[in-house]
Length: 380
Image (tube, rainbow, N blue to C red; front, side, top):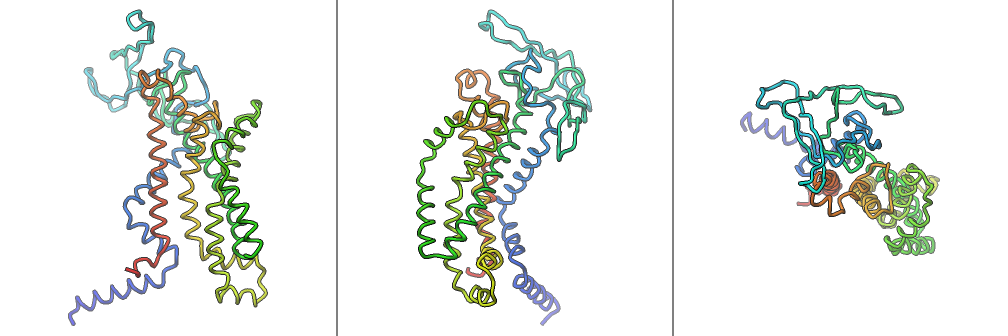
């Protein structure tokens, strides 16, 4: 045997040893990295989450203030330039705009770009104050010394759509996180009790689970919308919608937890734990649920976009969050009018962010689902 063959054999043996001695998390991560779509989705998801968390810094204006630029209502997106007929500049700049009404356009606002007047973009400018992690800040990533910059344009009240979009991502993710957390806790408790004890307890809990699953969503949401008082603040609406989404989103995961526990509760390691005096809660927490952790994580990731979709759908039809709260559903309400469809197409920019966010969750969830069985390669 040559030295090359001996080296290859030792490398293969080392890889096999590393494979069979790796933890469950390491095996899942190894399989997940092999899926290109899932990795791309993960990076996109990380970027969107960070963009939402640091939206006050990344955006130039407070998205809740209307009428900041009264002369630029329903304004088109601002284009950033580095070169023009007057030469090039290292610093990015935009052109000043002038708006006026004309008889020729049925008194609609007409925007005129003044290419002779440059407005240079500045970085780390001081603006409206905000809080991140409980600390006060006033610095923004970019802005103008005089005038305003609207990369995604403005809405009918003069709010900056760029700022609203990134704050909306953060709000929708927050609603989804709270909803998923509530559903996760309820599913583990209800599914754990049902699967561990079985018998009449399991039958009773399953009747409740089936009853919750058969509740029609739209009539429920209509009833809740009638129940919510108009005097509630935006924060109260936010938490109420999150709680409702969580309370109706637990049955699917609870069923999976129950099925797993019914299968595993008579295994030898569970019987050994019982003989040692372990309580039912200890057996479920320390022995049964850890063997099912990877599948629970996958289910949570997959259910996350459905929570975001539910919040968006509720806000879109006027039953969820409302202004001045910025969420993707609230922003999608603005694209339903014919005037927007014909004249203000930049209102659709948040729609693309919404689609990208949901697709990123779907790709990551599919990748985790395929990687959740770390020994799947050995079955081929």
